Image 1 (cartoon, helix red, strand yellow):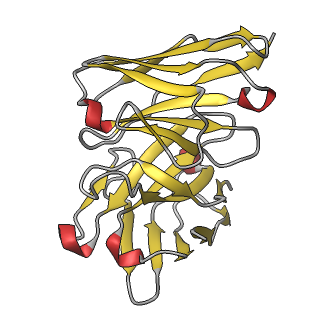
Image 2 (cartoon, chains in turn brown, red; image 1 turned 90 degrees about the horizontal axis):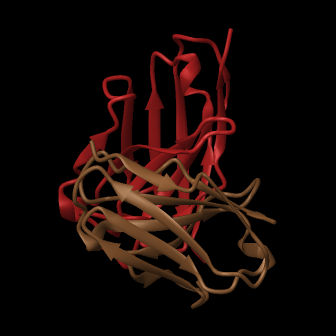
Image 3 (cartoon, chains in turn orange, brown; image 1 turned 60 degrees about the vertical axis):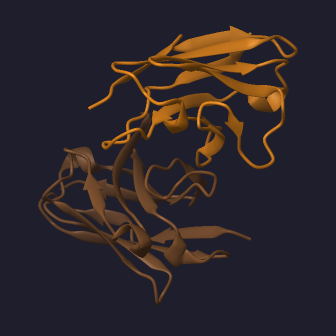
Length: 108
Length: 125
């Protein structure tokens, strides 16, 4: 099983600032098979990025993904109020398709 | 509009069974893989199973935590996926989401681009 470790657990920032979220895998993951999701309170998760770099439909370009091998990053260039949520990475390189434990992005 | 609607959740005693359904609309169901992901109260996401499309042999995978107790299936004629859950345990208490294999991915390896609203399963005596 590929374990994903996200850091930090909680990130406190202000609107307008840049957010950098990390996801580290216990073994190499193809860039084709790494996704990021956002979950707001009381809502279902939403796909932000698949294949490490590819924004999902209707996702604003302030969200970007990068990385390779075992280290992946989600960057939010300028935080908007609606971006404060929990973010998960997921690998779908091989079964079981695991998620990281999540990073909570909170307003400072 | 793509929609996935889960149903069948509720309160069930330990050791009993429950069947969840995921009714979909707005896309050609048979072309897509379907996954189930759960979230225990206040916890993170846990992938538990998927079933690929007929094109990919309707192959199935399970997480170790549910293997041998849960069974995923699909009925392409009805546009419904199912999750049969047997021998339920208190640790199975969670919101269960069904999801669609992302159209931007191959339906062999896939993220989830559409999610249902979830159905709550509570296992308690």
